[in-house]
Length: 138
Image (tube, rainbow, N blue to C red; front, side):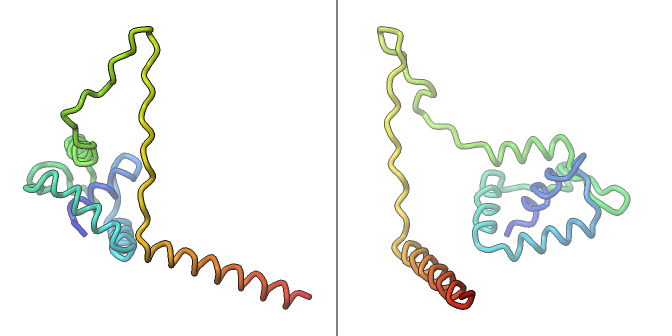
């Protein structure tokens, strides 16, 4: 988990971007134990700004027992979260008759086999639990 990106994300979620240290620590603990997804996400975001230093660059201010995200901090967070631009044109050229061309269907992402297997097993366990509950209720 990238500490600095996490701090920016947490502060941006608070009203006025300010949080006291107790709230920051609590939210950090929740995110730190939330799984690999958060750690992977913060790593990807941090890679967009490799020399990030939220305090010396003025992205976060220390104010009376807490921290506050600055406008500059919100800008760098927006930059990190922005989707990378591609070299392809953003909008397709309209057809000659004025109608917009059809967008190609995006194929669904394939699920890894082990994920599908775990999903089936969970479904089966839930079904068995419902059957046991019905049997016990009778």
